Length: 429
Image 1 (cartoon, rainbow, N blue to C red):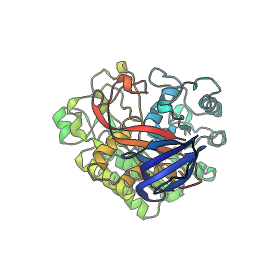
Image 2: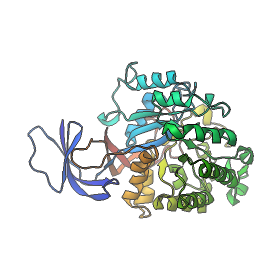
Image 3: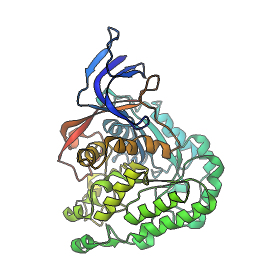
Image 4: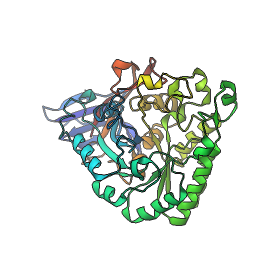
């Protein structure tokens, strides 16, 4: 199939391009990118793309799948359909499933299911697009319990994208051992630094809003002390590390200092931490109960500046589906997390790009090429002879967030029932 996208705004963070072009795509490859294409075959499908954005495919560093174990929250199929509808061409799921992704047999089983050998991926994906690529994080510890190291080499041979528990690891001797063991394997390793003793039963970032809303607070030091300890281990051992879920201004400072000193680290924050602060918790909407919690205003400002400067390399979605019944509880009792695969790009574009705070290239880089680089991967530039791994986005199309408009099986989002501007038209991958 040959398609001609006429006068589409091309945003390519790999080539640093943001401009209007005609783009010709045939048989899964980009054939031409130029100001005007007229020499086309008679069977070419021509699409007027004025006002649309064509970018490199979006890459989600980490999200949660319900399957296996909690298919009522999310199946692999619904996860990938939601990702396609949100513009993602690659999804990397965390290993905290039930059972956990801590052995090669389960890795093989999930990879086969993705390839359709189990027959579960026969329904079409959204927008007549292909389903995104699915990658699996392998667990660092058995059953992601933080106690006994998995057979990391066997998991690496089985094809995991990298290693993380997606949960805090507070045994620093274990963390040190993991860093030493992983050095020769050449796979990414990601940690979520969080001191759970300092976190205690907190559910909101410490500050005036926590006092006003009467919710138990979490001090910023619960994150920053854990980051400082991890950085000391990286400085000693030298194994490259990715720092997940950065959420405080002081954390951004620590990471900037570590990068300036030459430590081999990358870092990510989540999309909701860039958009909302503790004031939003006034509604007591349990979809705003996140872990780490939303930051205070200075935290949000520092995270945004950190992403723009590249101190924070990537924006992760950290899609965390829960059923309606699980979330209908008191704020402090509800499980932490919110969905995001279908919402992140429209909301980030609307509140960061359209306001002029981010350039389109800055946002797209943090959602596409930079997360891929954190995984030791690359995305292809939008140039001739490269594979077409692309996202077509309409920043002006409006839609309502409701059960019938979502592909994810869960609805735990504070934007439920609201009208959004910006929608994905198609992906290629």
